[in-house]
Image (tube, rainbow, N blue to C red):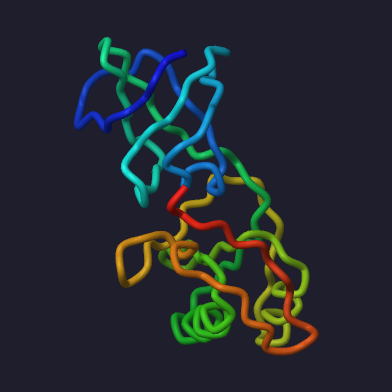
Length: 164
């Protein structure tokens, strides 16, 4: 089995590895490269893979990580204050967010969509790669997330420990 055990700063990839976010936050796992070869990822705990990252083995193989398309809700808004309010309310619920100029994405959840509709926004469904903000302490939004039951209407999410 191929052992991908290091990050590569630059080089030309021989093959790609497409993973959703929940798999890109794991530092140790068995994967199937896009060409069908089975490999193991053995990185230092806590490392997060991003679209475009390069991984290598001890024999010169270079693998480019690709973020898989995922089910997300997307909000487009030209009003920075309204978008900031949406980020505030979603962040209060420990939701991982991808924030770009005029665009906000989070893993699809109809309850959160309804909440944002209540704020005057119009979430839409999309299948796109999801790259949430790293957070103030450098990890993904999942790195230190815990479930807090604020009320019975809040969605229940399963959070995985980024350490492995």
